[in-house]
Every structure is written in C-alpha cells, then in structure tokens.
Amino acid sequence: MSRRESYTFVVDGDEVAAKRWNNPDGSVGGWVAATAKIDSSATIEFDAVVEPKAVVGPNVRVKSGTVIGFDCHL
Image 1 (cartoon, rainbow, N blue to C red):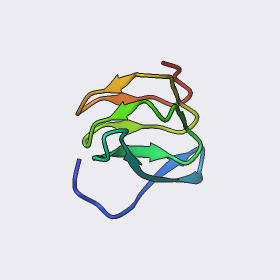
Image 2 (image 1 turned 180 degrees about the vertical axis):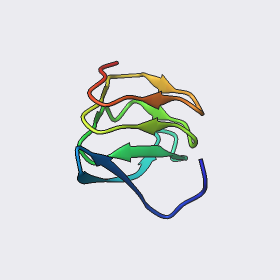
Image 3 (image 1 turned 90 degrees about the vertical axis):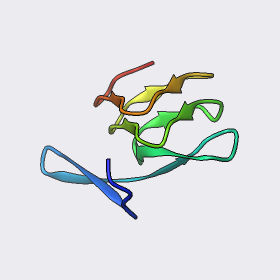
Image 4 (image 1 turned 135 degrees about the vertical axis):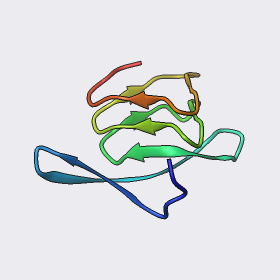
C-alpha cells in the first residue's frame, strides 16, 4: 500500500471515504472506511485495510498486509 493522503473505496458505484486509523498507542494505522465500526482498543497496522461496513471488535490486532473485507465481522 502506498503512503497516500486519502483513500476512497468504490462499492456498487458509490464512493466511501476512508481515513487512517489512530491506534491506541498513538501510532498511525491503516486505512479504515468511514462506514466501518472499529473498537477504540483495536490496533490496525499501517499497511492494513478495513473495507466498508466491516466490524473490528475489542482488542483485535489487524496485521500489516491484511484486508478485512466488506461487511466482515471480527
């Protein structure tokens, strides 16, 4: 994944904005779609992606290179 300033998913022709996640330790995380639900205790590593409508629960760690797919629940 490149070091972009912004990221947009396209789902069924609609655009869904994404932003970098702020990890509990203060580090910059991966891209998280605006419609994803992420628990504040979760860590999303820098090169990970969380797609629209995905849910990441408490204390989950999403490792670098991982893609959490559309509407996936962890």
